[in-house]
Amino acid sequence: MTLTLWQRLDRAGRNLAPFAVTVMLVLVAMVPLHIPAYTQVAPALTLMSVYYWVIHRPDLLRPLAVFAIGLLEDLLSGAPLGMNALVLVAAYWVVLSQRRFFLASTFALLWFGFVMIALGAALLQWAALSAYYATVLPMDAGFHQALLTIVLFPLFAWLFIRIHRAFLQP
Image 1: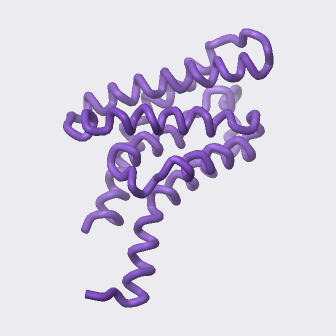
Image 2: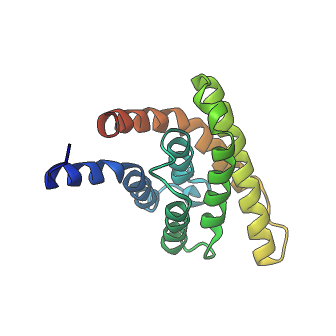
């Protein structure tokens, strides 16, 4: 059966949902909130999105797209160029290697897996920033960011599940 032009456009738009949601979260993360010291501990929304979509639809969120999203986040946030790209791509490959385990697990195990990924990403980002600035930076801000990200993950996972069911189910 051949698809009409509108059906192909609809399918292409739906298949862009993981990428579009992740880019939207990059933009949401850049919204200035007038909370003291919030920028140092702002949750890693893109990490949550990459984690969810790599487990559930890795065919729609490829490593090159994750790298581009990381670069966009670096450019918008003023971070050293490649810092978030490195963290997101590293998380992508770790999650992809454990994807079969996560697909067969409960939400509690999925959340525990995210705890490990978020802590690992915070550690990698701290190490890379320490190397970039050639000094040992304090770990408290990265740890607090990871903690806030972990606490907010169930809320965003619920949102990703809703988007997944609305746009990507056959």
